Image (cartoon, rainbow, N blue to C red; front, side):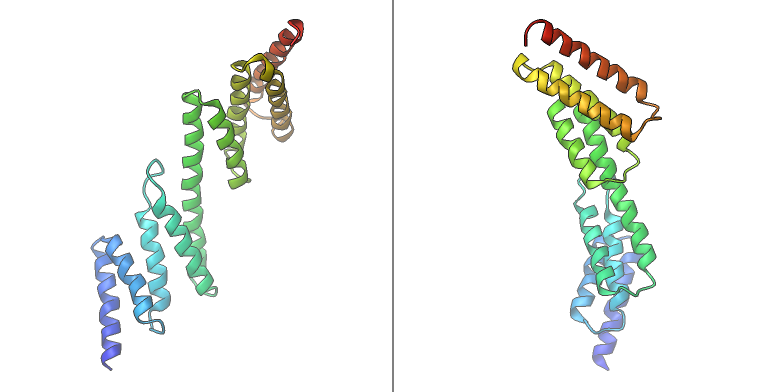
Length: 208
């Protein structure tokens, strides 16, 4: 039938754009195929390729991650639409790689805040990171940055705020040691804690 021929031609056209490396255009046509032929023979493959094109367009972690977010959404949409697909394992692998990219971007942003001495931003971003990536293998290192940021914020505070902020340093130190008692960063964490305690003693000495 004419509609069957048109469907096949359009599907092949989407593939032709993909095969020459135009992932933006092929993504558009694979997605459009699913709209034009919702009951077509190639809906599952086209919906997957739509998501995969987004994945291929996901840029380096230092750049804007809109395509990464879109790729995750499209891959999840494919999984929801075709929960029995043989592509599920591949989708999960791709999603893991995309999540890793977003995680690294957030982690490197926190390191940048530390370099800029923007202690409040580093603390807030660290707290958000723990929520977003509770099982991250970067948590140990991040908690050291968080501890240091808490201390730097405290030592640069006015006297009326310093005591409370120094207590937060100790709270963070206790949490770090309880989670990572064998950490290679332990000596650095202990040094920060000792400096915070020494500063707290000075406050008490001067009556704050």
